[in-house]
Length: 247
Image 1 (tube, rainbow, N blue to C red):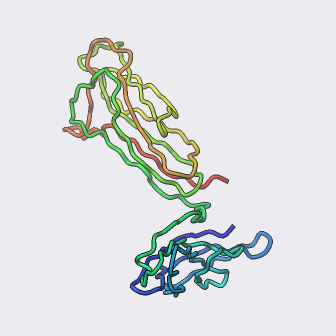
Image 2: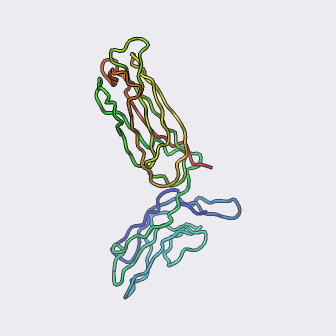
Image 3: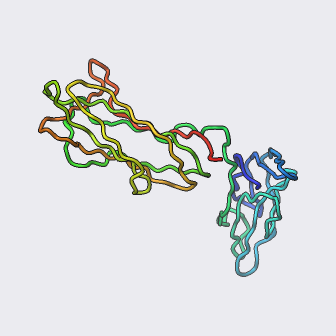
């Protein structure tokens, strides 16, 4: 399947031509063969605007790396953009993108790096409320299905706790409003940093990732946050790291 590795963004100009940014493309070539085709920045002309109605321009790249404009997409070519051309316009800056199936090549064998990084911003010595609290909500967009490594640690202690006394903090990871995973961490009278880690797949598209906490096993003693201060405590952190494309 043809795909875009990077680049190839189309913009309008002050004439009836489109400007296309440099790109790297993947073009099928026979059975089980793919060609990586680099392209330079180019300006490609299009026909004069229609006298009435609209026209759809498709800007695409061929297997030879040539950028062309047409009204249909030939087989094994890559669509870079689809533009609506209103009647009577004299510049492509007056066109609008109808961008549809813009296919990006999966980063097979490579990582997209850290997608989310969050740190609890409350101060050292903060007393956690018992009620469920949403502490983070972030949006990420994936061009294809990916495997994600979810990493978390907390540093909390029980205030004035005696040996053998304990409480706990429950965390929920939600993806698009649904609980993906929950975990509960024991809290005792020392400031212990505890870790949680898991891998899971995440489908292509835009997703909202939410993290919330709730004090559990409440024994009527406060749970204290440890961050910075004289001990330079690590606090509480959450991150999402891309591992790679799903096979």
